[in-house]
Length: 310
Image 1 (cartoon, one colour):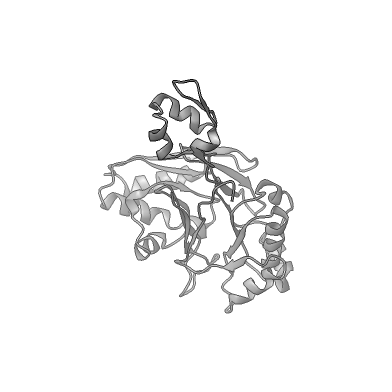
Image 2: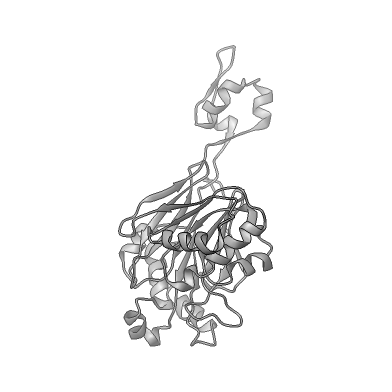
């Protein structure tokens, strides 16, 4: 049951020879979710061997170019590859203009449906759900309406032991009850405790994506205990004034959010091209939050399965 993030792009507005603009792929239980789609996202998807056909949902944080310029090219490639399944774009209502522009000039023979699933940027709300996860928006503070995204696994049931099913001849109709915590009563009337029949469930995992934003305390409250936090760090603390002017964060500010939220791990990205030494971001943040890493394009970050009693 995989839960991993692959960074496709970690640069801010200006791409560099080593870093593409914002784009990430989150893989959960073999479902692939694209988060933001900066210029060249489809190139990175191919480079890191992520199958384009597995992507059915794209989440767009806001409508600045470095987060959306990759959309037309990706939509076109989907068509050239013969896509037939519906593609869902989760974003601001204005994203429809970009979809309509693409359809008018490049998608007249499109064989698949592009469906916008709009959301409001000013409140935290659940915008997606399947049998494995939920996705919520996280209101951010940027120059235009912007959200982050919180991906959370649903609570899991206990795992029934295979040998218990055989030993006590447990019928199928009772298995779900046992997985939900009930004891089992044999035909002889003997009560078998649930703890003897099952293993504790796996912990639900979570990932928070917090891109372009000013530092603000409320964000930490909304992502308490998250396993993996991606937080933008466009600037270093020495350029704190510039970060405020442009509605961005520093590495130290991202670390403060991670510390207050008590997350398990912090990864930094969205670096300004003015900095040549990205290690400085990691060094600055680690003073406040030791388990920090400055991302590299192509790096994969996995969240391991752990049982609730470990």
